[in-house]
Image (cartoon, rainbow, N blue to C red):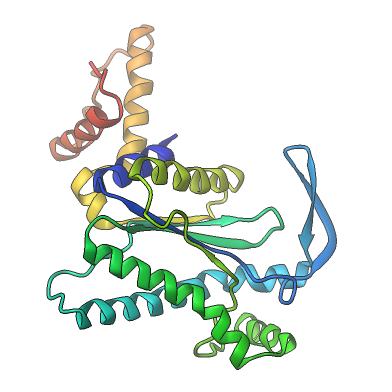
Length: 267
């Protein structure tokens, strides 16, 4: 599918080692079980109680973004303190996906090839992983932590330094190949989007990478349209050129460049 190809070609274009981070939701202290359940792949799965699930999912994206931005600023400062004066590393992409229990969790792909990228990504990882510990020390009462999520949900009030998440899983210490990471991220993004045709899911791939490859969702959808036209022409059901005449020369060239990447047997 298009989303899978977008991840695969853009993440593999980076070409280096990659660090995967998974930010898990809170535990039963903030997300207790409810009476509802659902069946996933033949398995009966309990869901978090509806009111807590609702509060979590409505505020999770904003809280995760604030947490990652704080981690990124800390990593930037640490890299600069080590004497680095060049461009700062940035994430390769991220995905928001739903756990079986019905609440959002987040995945990031971080660069892990150069020494600067390793230092930066490890600092991001450390900051994310320490966040829940700092919060437990500052707000030891779980009722107070639930109240902070409720305030953000009900009034939009943001408590500085509170994010509400759980553990962070960092994958292999030495990083992973870009090919393996791309497939993992694609499965998370594509799996959620396939279940939610309303489009509420979210994924992000570095704009720098998509500019370099041209592999965007818009271009991939256009490639899908070329594939359909190719077969209609072969079946005698379309008497027209393979590339639509109403496309501009610039857009045609851009789509054909992407087509050469994702469908090398093009006519």
